[in-house]
Image (cartoon, rainbow, N blue to C red):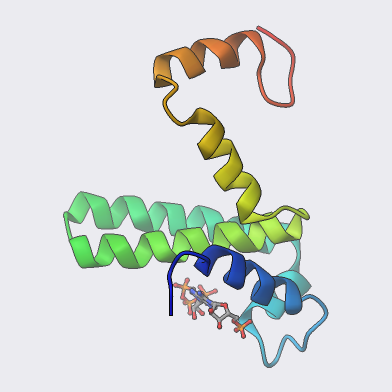
Length: 115
Ligand SMILES: N=c1c2ncn([C@@H]3O[C@H](COP(=O)(O)OP(=O)(O)OP(=O)(O)O)[C@@H](O)[C@H]3O)c2ncn1[C@@H]1O[C@H](COP(=O)(O)O)[C@@H](O)[C@H]1O
């Protein structure tokens, strides 16, 4: 199966678990537990990614980043957001120097007021 649309397909599956039986679905269980549990998993997987990277273990890094992306997608769904919106944001940044983007953020921070 093509990998091109994996994020969209996975987001659809995650969305379909809303209201599903927490005994039969890991995603439904996370939704059922709520915001703090979902965000705790994102934090844990981020930490496990850092630990794998410190070990320099390529296979483990890929495994942990997959866990991190997956739990980040559950968090996105929890807040009514889609991975396509993240991809659009990355596309918007494409070709824009990270330094230019940083300067733009200072004068127009996302969801905040300028410093
Ligand atoms: N991609 C994933 C995926 N990646 C990781 N995980 C689960 O995320 C959990 C990771 O937790 P940890 O690594 O911390 O291990 P753990 O000790 O078992 O978890 P905790 O007890 O610490 O919470 C494990 O239970 C993994 O099985 C995932 N669970 C589901 N998916 C996808 O989501 C779909 C829907 O899943 P269900 O809702 O379970 O049907 C699946 O078909 C998959 O495509």
